Image (tube, rainbow, N blue to C red; front, side, top):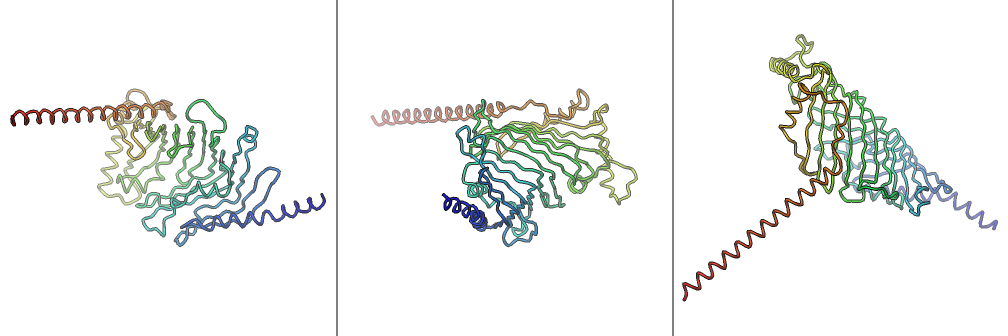
Length: 385
């Protein structure tokens, strides 16, 4: 018994070394990316291990920042699911940093699209993941728009995905709750995301609410000058987006809402061209006409429908939305809560009906063609006699 205890202690002391070698071996060969960790801590009683200083870097690129850096991550067995007879795991990442870079130059681009991240997680934790959480993370999007260059940073990012493997069987078609929050310090706004999903499909089904609130308009002046030939003097914009998807069919809307927006200023310090002067003047007049005077806001509701590859917008409802906000009833700075998973399901049903009608029409056309061919053959036989 003493020898067995000594053997277990020795195995426990050596286990972090072997796990460290295994993880670094998995991370070393990721195609165009490579990774490395500094240390591993084992918690046998909890059925977990912690990874310290995980870095994943693109090979042969011009970007100094790693694609992914996680100071500490915890991979463990989810015990509450084990009590229900399911062996699944959970992952928690503390203060992770994700750095995307977009460029036509491959050496200056870093998106991670070349790596199968699902397989990587499976290799690091060889049981299915049922919960994934991020604590105080950061996502940097470099050159999200290349001309003019616009970088976006999402900081203080916290989020969680639960019941990924549908361990807790819940009524309905979307058993996995998802939430995330974050700040956009470069633009002065905040982000909030809430969703329910079904993740056990190649193309997941979902129903989500996404909002960007109180983004400072003056922070996007470089884009406004480039694409609209104007800039903002003050104001904020909030965007509310509801979307549902079933089998690739989408239904939803986007509701942009500006507050206290001012575009035209008679005496600007910067050199302003004549063209921009009149563009800003016309835009300010249009804003005054289409603004809800009581709420000091311009807003509309843009319906969205279609598929993942082809999202369509409706023009006339968008125009009527602007007029409704201005002269009928001001839109509220909140979700309308009018989009449900049934809306996306209805699109699938309508698409199925349309395809069925199309197939029926094709069958009818083929029957008519065969009927016409038989008639022509009978006419030929009559003429032959």
